[in-house]
Picture 1: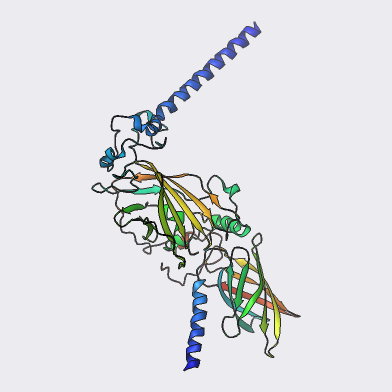
Picture 2: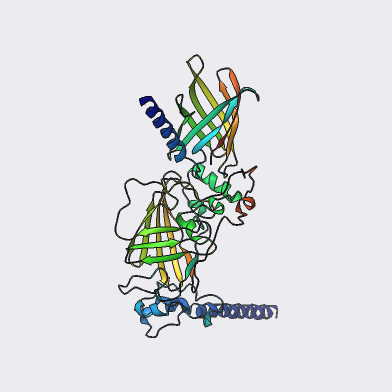
Length: 314
Length: 134
């Protein structure tokens, strides 16, 4: 009798667990429809629902869609979420990296506050660079908060996003900052090489090229007046920074960078893939960093004293 | 006239050296450091040190100008933030003295970080404090 009871309990538990399992499996399957649609957009005859500001670009996409992306479609309640529109494209088939002519402008936000994310233990820091990185986690006294223009990935982790402005006739792309110094970087797309002699600058010298649908931006000529990301990943003026931008659909940009800096690391390393999200119908606005800037006072951390006699002028 | 031109050129060279290394966020020792050293609190001597990290080692000069000297050895122990550097400098009699400085970095993340510590020159010793220029 004891055994019968035990078997009944075991069967009931097994059945309950299986039911829970089925229940959980069903939701993601529905929620990930967006991702599936994104990856198979080429097979969809119908135009997918489009977010505001991207409608005109969809037909030019030719249904190429993303690479199995659809980052916005999955998750909770995904069953009812519309899949993101496919990557908008220029008439020659290249992805539109920013806003579309004749459409309301938009910005990219999100991205990479800490480049070593997910692989900190594997980063080939030189000892001094690791010590500096660790210290910067305590003392977040970064130049960006003092209104200094910050190049590399730091340009994308401002609170208000960035605008990528493609000037195809001039063969260049502008990356417009919002927060911090309200400045910009130029990516030259005309096939030029880096100048042999460079005056080191905050944004360096950027040249871009296409690797399929991925924009590859190669930058050298950095100075050491900024942090490469919000959390203070160190660099020196020997930094060679290669970024890969892939717009996998209308609202999602993948970003990955390779850091080659023999001054701070023992070997080149590549970040994880970060995601930037598109905010449609949003213009850059006037942002004066120096106005009411409390950054220096708020971010002193464990430091004993900071010279406040100097003006914070970028 | 020629002397004036040479003097002006010298000043420009020194200025360009100083300007090129200010406000660095890279290696903690890179930059221009100024302060003083001495045997007592009342008796001090100016000290300016320009250091640069090339990815493998630290090099530099002290007291840029007519009496500048190369820094012979400069190291940073980033596990303790201790700094060691050695330099030869002319004394009043014109002979070279060998100075050894050992200090500790403070306010590492701040642009105006400092190095404080002690120095020795033979049997003579004292303290020093230098602050990095922004």
